[in-house]
Length: 272
Image (cartoon, rainbow, N blue to C red; front, side, top):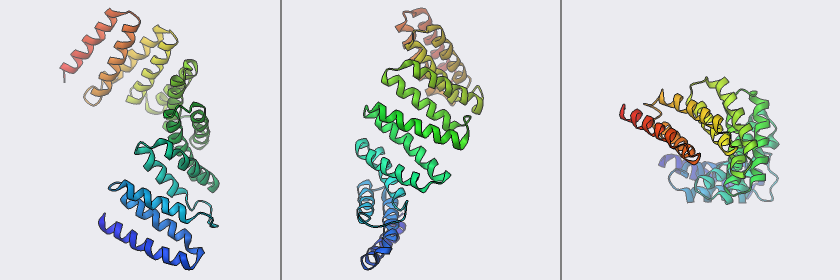
């Protein structure tokens, strides 16, 4: 890593000199600074951020090829996002999405869709639900066009949209999205995958919010059955889902059923 960083710094220094003499060399400077940032992001986030920001600043007012800054903006956005600076990350996500969309290739639009998913999660966390929905839907449109409906990427978008609608107070729409996520995951992963169990659990929660307690119990039971059959690898998920189910039953005033799930959970953990 040290050798890689020194090489990147040396290349950036040479690129600065070249760009100062010839504006046509600025794309090379941007690429060199991106490499400096990439080499540092795991060990020195502040230094990586500084390199990315220098790359962006150095390009201001310059006539550069479309997409020159796309990866820099993307990497800075994710660095800020994963450092807990979501609001600062949003602007760079927006700019990176614009860059990748402008490249107008299938691959670039795929990257833009993934960034839209990230940005939507950021906006959701910031309480900007309308903006989050907009980006989720645009991402879903792209991923369905690229992969068809039956793909894990599309299922993830359905699930994320369901989570957004649930938090925003629209349980009907949440239920529809969770149902779509379940349908796709069953088709793609089979009926006994851990992600199918998650989809059942999410759908059960939405059904509970809509006071369809029979359906809620049905989906939680299916989720637990899937996870219990894989208890060795899914202990944490089985325990978390059981606790959610217990809480739901207790909210419904069904203490005998809640106690039965507690007993089931204790017995399953004791067998390990």
